[in-house]
Amino acid sequence: MNDKKMALMQGNEAVAEGALAAGCRFFAGYPITPSSEIAEHLAEKLPEVGGSFIQMEDEIASMAAVIGGSLAGKKSMTATSGPGFSLKQENFGFACLAEIPLVLVNVQRMGPSTGMPTSPAQGDVMQAKWGTHGDHPVIVLSPASVDESYRAAVRAFNMSEKLRVPVVILLDEVIGHMREGVEVTAAEDLVLEERKRPTVEPSEYQPYDDDGSGIPPMANFGEGYRFHVTGLFHDETGFPNLDPEVADDLMRRLMGKLERYPEVYKWVEHTDTEDARVVVFSHGSPSRAASSAVRQARREGLKVGQLRAVTLWPFPEDEMRKLADTADVVLVPEMNLGQIKLEVERVMGGSASVIGLNRTDGELFKPSEIYDKIREVY
Image 1 (tube, helix red, strand yellow):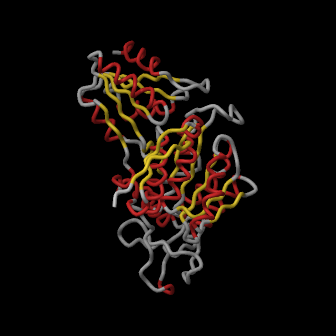
Image 2 (cartoon, one colour):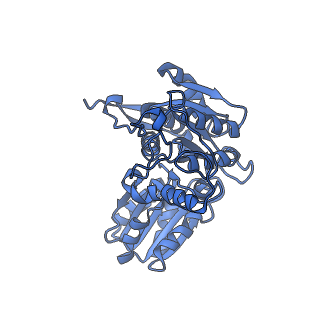
Image 3 (cartoon, helix red, strand yellow):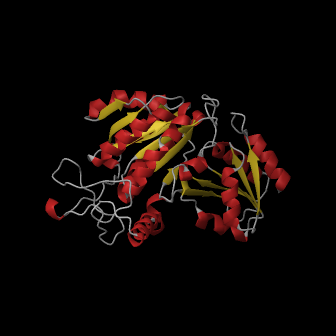
């Protein structure tokens, strides 16, 4: 069966529907503009499919509740924006070290502080990777459309369940609130990942015993498997162990999951980059204007291409380095003052000139702005 239908959805609604399709059955959150529609939609829909919704007293508690929901065996999600994303970071780090699958949606708005709650921005891209303290594994997706937001939610749960790594979805206010057509796939046609379960008796279960894959099997609380979960460094028993060798082994295994399984999370789109002298590197909503500008430049005979990262972290270094043979310039449009430009410069290592095009006024890029910059640097 390959039953697909089109539906008109808002971006926030699409994320919620994608999460439901992926099997999300627990949501805990606290309302905050411009993400509140995600919570509102799931408050209505989750009970209809046997799931649970709870509005917590704040963002800190909602992140803790999602961790608990996942430990109990439910695919779990929360959503927030701005100051709420900051409040979630300590418990997000707990989930990273304890290897708890979950999805965190951040509908970005202008900041810092309260900023401009109803205006789009991309000021959280570095916070999404480094917002919590210490080295830690994280996957971050940055969709560029409402349809892609739906698919990103499905894939985010698959990534998180497969690797036992928390996944962040970065929308922005415009993607979250705009309405577009979404291709909805029938549930039976979706390929869904489930976390690996233990195959031993409860009495023999070691919650962080690596079976050679780098991803320990995960039991559910309440099903006879009793185990300890901590934010301290721990050995295979789950109990704290601060031995330097144990800590080093654990950290290298956590980070190694991303190095070992790039096929699980890699999501990059090339357009006319094979011969491009100028490449526009984009993610999220600026990609829409960038695509239009690149098409116009190509129509006029300019060798221009686009590299669009849906998976923003881990950063697509291999894909960037492929541009070194042809690209003279990499243009990076961002709704911030150059956060990803620095990463592009690091990866390109001087093989191409990296030029930023930046907006911090709460407005979207126009295709003409990016096109004019292409002509200027070509």
